[in-house]
Length: 159
Image (cartoon, helix red, strand yellow):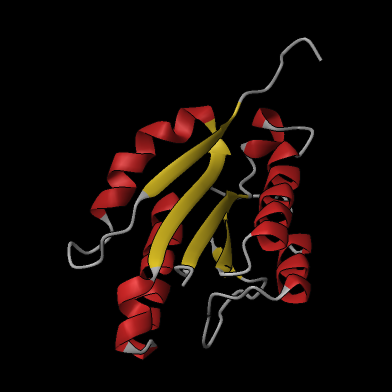
């Protein structure tokens, strides 16, 4: 039996990313990650969180009930809504939102599925934001063990 993997993919859409990632490579990387995993690992479910001064979940700014999904159509739509906006970088709000969705998912998942499921937070942001990962981990309740990974973007300055 394959273990369900639930990935909260946090993508920085703040204004500072215009300078850090002018080619919008983070959006392409997010799309490639989702497409690769969905095509090879059908048990993987995603939650797409975009963040700047606000947070969107699966393309909605104030989702009533956000959930992990492996629906290619829903995830593609959510990825297409990501775009660089003006505003600050609310990385803490994004992680807190991911944590709340994980807690809600844990509360509504059957005991066996809950025991088998593995949750991950993947932060797709500029390299300098790596310092925020330890702070982000502190925003996740101790009772919810979720690994946080940083996928950093390294921009070639000679382009």
